[in-house]
Amino acid sequence: MLPVGDLDRSIDFYTGMLGMSLVRERRSLPTPTAYVAYGPEDTSPALELISGTGKSDKPWHGHIAISVQNLQGLCEKLEGAGVPFRKKLQAGGPTSSNAFYANIFDPDGFEIELCQPRD
Amino acid sequence: MLPVGDLDRSIDFYTGMLGMSLVRERRSLPTPTAYVAYGPEDTSPALELISGTGKSDKPWHGHIAISVQNLQGLCEKLEGAGVPFRKKLQAGGPTSSNAFYANIFDPDGFEIELCQPRD
Image (cartoon, rainbow over all chains, first blue to last red; front, side, top):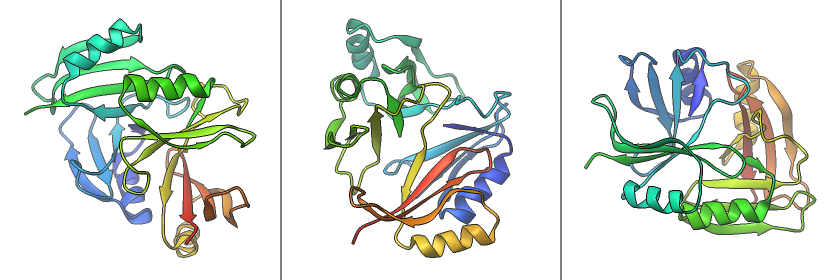
């Protein structure tokens, strides 16, 4: 995830300059969001471009996102191992594409979003 | 790319906690480096974990890397469009896995490494 200052500017850059495709848009969110990738989202990694967050671009306010199938089981393992959580396991809201999600920190403090897509 | 404080600690985290595999190691580099991913590097995205950079973990000193087939052509397009370069197109050194590489900044100043693998 990259917090961006101008969503269209970033979409233009990643599609026009770097050959990605716009694979999804969520313009109606309070923080209008778009996804750009080299292939379908279910098989290819995508950059999540989020505008309007009010966060500065630097230092880094992004994260790595990883989709998993059994998030409850993974969270139990992570908690048992003492991995720090920024957000404990919770259900995704009505606008979320995820059934569940949680946010952890890796050993260097990089934030990782763990998400379980809806069935 | 994530600059990490302890390479083994990070490998253990991403393999043991998050189910990635260690797909490549470059321990003999001045900055010992490892790659972790959910599949083979040629078809799956990988995290590049670099230790010993002397850079603080925060703010962000990482980058996004994208492999391309015709880097010279892309760089000409990018230069023509006024995209800022941190490193102009150059040949990879003997320890590099890339024939050519260049580093640019996206519209928000996020650094992107463009690399053309050796044939």
